[in-house]
Image 1: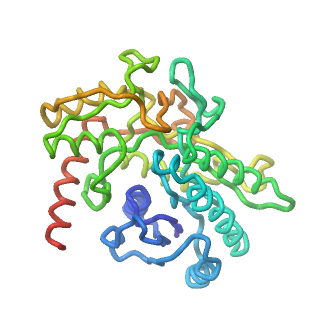
Image 2 (image 1 turned 90 degrees about the horizontal axis):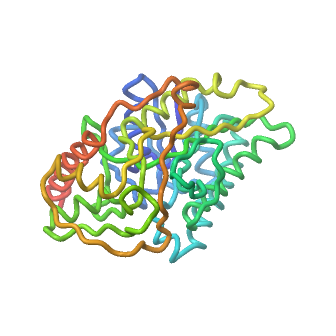
Length: 336
């Protein structure tokens, strides 16, 4: 297959591209490089620009008329930033996605694999969710993902529509490509594992934000999935796209949770980090704007329908993240 990946020079998009290449498929990358890195392109077909640029997308399809599907990863993703600048997030994530879909429809690309988020789920009493759980996003970032899902679902229901969409609701990616081709490009990440690594390297305490959640130890809970397992889920969804949603199906929109099926609290993440890396001082504080208790998936729909399952542990994710961090820091130091 030949697959267009928006945001394909970023952490997740570039890792998906590597997973596709390893299985013999050809990625075509569209990225504005606002966060993505040229170093992640590895000689792949690359177009620099905006997903809302119709002329650019027309050119991509003119030069690659054999594109089979689009993986839509491009998005702004920082929760506190979305709280501070909601209009920017709605414009970038929702408004520009609509422009992208119009261009895809015009160019006859009816299959879309959307990078969604488990952050859209409504808080559950025990933090466990399935694809059937209610959604009620609690931050502007998460609401853009929920809105985009609604846009995509409605798009598949339009008059004469041939579009089919699979939405993969990510839980919490960690780690790096085990071959160290890609990993987190941001040296100042906002998620818990990134902050742990940052604190460990600087010798500063790590702060657990929020300690009064209704979990077994009061800290938030997440489903930490290795980014390589997440990338493999995309390959599985693309390979089995027509089995998951057959051409001509009445319902042309389908959702899959992509997580490990196991919840890990922030305190448990700290313990796992210390077991892999070493001791670190820990402090506590109240939740940040937009923070939520979190959730983890208990559904096995992706295993049943896509034939996918995770193979990497949380310890693998921590170890690969540390290895990548050192390699990436050294690479940036050499480049400068």
